[in-house]
Image (cartoon, rainbow, N blue to C red; front, side):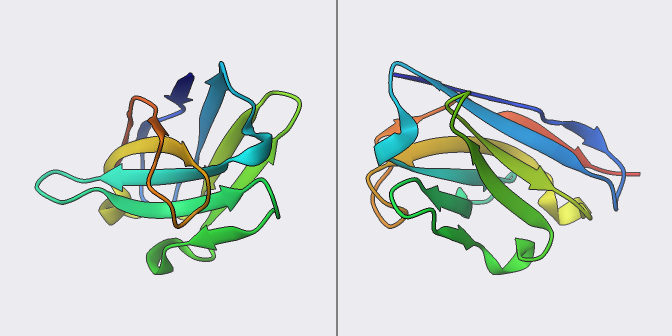
Length: 118
């Protein structure tokens, strides 16, 4: 099982980025796919989650209304569209999959750096 996260970069405040998490060796049909982030000196935190079983989504309060998670069935991938980015969104972003959005992560992808700065 491999999860490949990509799409990070440097963006100005108010800008947008779209992160991708492409899965191989596993079909996402029966998994929940989460996005997490870890800022320097802070613990890793959950940002958003998509449950493939019932298509429910979850967002951390600080990103509600700005981030959107979506799944691409054909590409076996999940995306995180991030709009109205703020400097406090700066972190390494990781994707992970588990049996539900409340379950421990079974597999992690490598992180992608998101830097929001002017």
